[in-house]
Image (cartoon, rainbow, N blue to C red):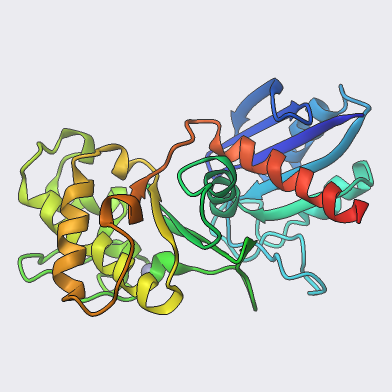
Length: 293
Ligand code: ZN
């Protein structure tokens, strides 16, 4: 039996790894993201050291085309990142070695790790939300990653503004109308002129942030009725925010729907820094399992 490969393709950093079929990382390397061609040169140089790779999971920064059968499947779509718009990421990998690849978003990769062995391992339906430089969501319905015309962009759902919030918003497309524009890390920093890390517990900044995350959780609850909502990314590293999110959620829900106990329903991630790599391994393995049937 060969190895599993993982490519966690972030907008600022790439992490590549190989592991065994028990998901132990054998070797891992990270390097800064350059343009498409140069970055993939490095990716391929890493995997060239391992002639026996069974499958590779790729979790890439977006927007990317993950719709099987689409003309641009496997490519990075329009992005302001230099040297990436239209880049045929998957095509380059397949031209290098024609093995099975699982191609999905970075958010889906980390979300899938939470679903498989993390905070949502005991359920079939989950929303994973990451709040960092941007806001993204990975959604699992009946054990499958949800996607249709494209991958969900549930970080850009429109929200009602907090009455005390006069910030003009951070989303280049939606200003202060969407979740990312109001609640991502840079929005917090821009609004309060300090990093989320430095804002003390008890500050009104956390009430406002929790109000938005609770509102998002409410919208996902209304539309998807998941078993669990998992929050990851830099901002929810501050665990003090969870009781605030739950409290605001209950208030905004107004007893309308029955949901699981809130401290089991709205929860932080469980996988550590290797979540993205683990997710890629799990997805690669799932590909092999589905081919074996
Ligand atoms: Zn937006």
